[in-house]
Image 1 (cartoon, rainbow, N blue to C red):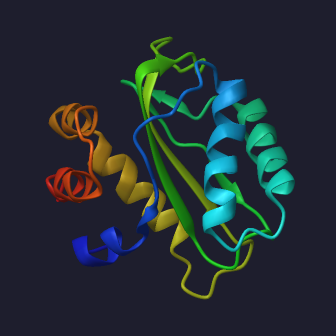
Image 2: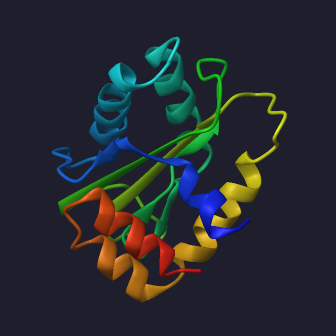
Length: 154
């Protein structure tokens, strides 16, 4: 996946730098609530239930201050990616037991013609392996700064 295509999945309207939640149980509904009015979500409760079921399989808090809640739902017509940042940190039950500061929420329809969900998820994990990218993302305030930081992972 090339940089231009990767960046095309991020939307300024789904960029939040001031998450208020302090727990995983609260941040998932907070983010779903923030994205619902800005997207074509058919049923935000269905999305939230799907994300909670996914978390029961194992935390999507993958460590180093990062969580990537994700899944498939009939409630979206195309791949949806939201970014949220918490300055204070969120108790997310991450693998490394450290607070989460960066959240990428990814929701895809069950059937995609473009079949981009898994390649996008894989590329995001690859980009986020870089300590300097995560560190930059923790200090950003604007969508432009976000795009520049993400582009540094390519």
